[in-house]
Amino acid sequence: MTKLTITVGQHHLTATLLPNATVAALRDQLPLTLPMLNLYRRELTYRFPQALPAEELQTSGYAVGDIAYWAPRHSFVIFYQQTGEIIGDLQKVGHIEGSLDFLRQAGNLDVVFALGDE
Image (cartoon, rainbow, N blue to C red):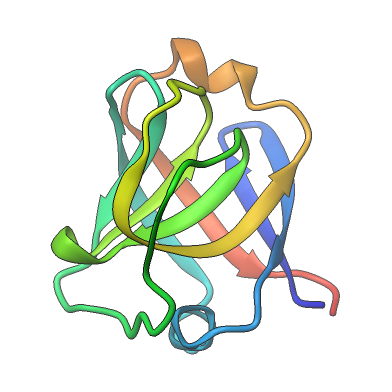
C-alpha cells in the first residue's frame, strides 16, 4: 500500500492511499506544498487549476481523516470534523490515521504532501 506523509506545521501525519486513477495522478505531482483553505469547520481544501481523473465518483458520507477529491471544483480535501453531510461526486483518495483535532483551531495552512514508505 502506498503511504503519504503529510506535514502541517509541526504536525507529521501518515495516510494510506487507495489504488485509483486520482491517486496515480497525484503521485506524479509529489512532493507538493499546497495552500489549503479551512472550510466549513470540517475540511482543509485546495482547488487544483486542472481536473484530476476520477473514475469512481460516488455520493457518500465521510469519516474524520478521509482524504478525497471533489470533482465539480477540482478540490482536494482532508476531512477533520464530522458533520454527517452526504456529498456527491466524491472520489475517495485515502485515509489519515491519528488525531486531526489540532485543525479545529487552525486557519488556512500550507500543507506538504510527499510519498512515504511503500
